[in-house]
Structures are given as C-alpha cells and as structure tokens.
Image (cartoon, rainbow, N blue to C red; front, side, top):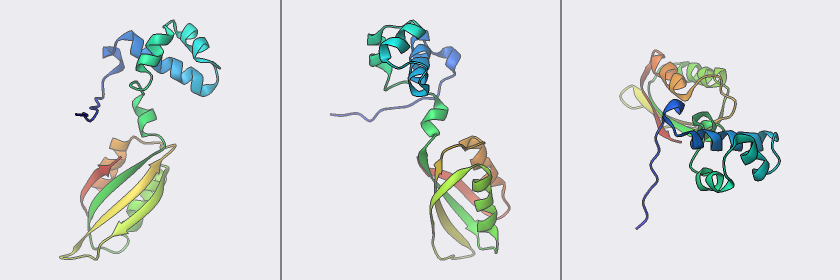
Length: 146
C-alpha cells in the first residue's frame, strides 16, 4: 500500500542542521559553485550519505514554487474589463499565463480558471492570491492545483 507524501512548511530555524546543509549543498551544485556532490558536501560539512538520504526531501519553499504551473479558480461578476484587471495582476507578478478557461456567465457570475507558470515572480503566491481577492468583482479566488 503506497502512501501519498505529506508536505509541511516549516520555519528554517526549526529544522535540523543537516536539512539546511543539504539545501545549501543543492544550491552550490545548481549554481556551479560546486561541480560534484563530493565537493558540495565537503563545502557544507555533511556526509555524502546524508546528502543522498535527504536530497529529494529537502527543497526551499520558493524553489518548490518556481517554474511550476499553478492553477487558479476565480468566481467573477460578469463585468466589462474585470478579466483585464486580473490579467494585469498576473503580469505585474511576472507570472506567465499558460491557459485561461471560462464558462458562459450564469446568474451574473462566471467561473474562470487560469493556469500560470511561476518563473521569476516578484510577489509570493499568497500575496498574488490576496491581490486577486481584493479586486472589486472577484467573488472568490483560490488555488486549484499546483
């Protein structure tokens, strides 16, 4: 019986030091400051076995969100220009929109689904979601997948 992995967001200061060192070793490898795992583990003073044990389980939160497709579901009032305002928020956040789907408005509202790749965003995902919710005419905004 396979279990689905569970994820937690934890303040870095609460983590065991080995997790922080694994994250640093991964950063050194990704930036080219270290060219081999052996070099990265020596630079961070951890064993190679600790690196290999935790490398797939440790990832800084921002790195988890970078380059990922996030799908937002919005419930919008049927108002001219509202979608344009929302798209401007995505553009301001430097999110690259992949798809936009909308149903025909009924009872004055429409469900709009927007998938966007988060590459070099300049606001957090939470801040983008709050900005969407703050727009007049947005009844509901939530992250559907990502």
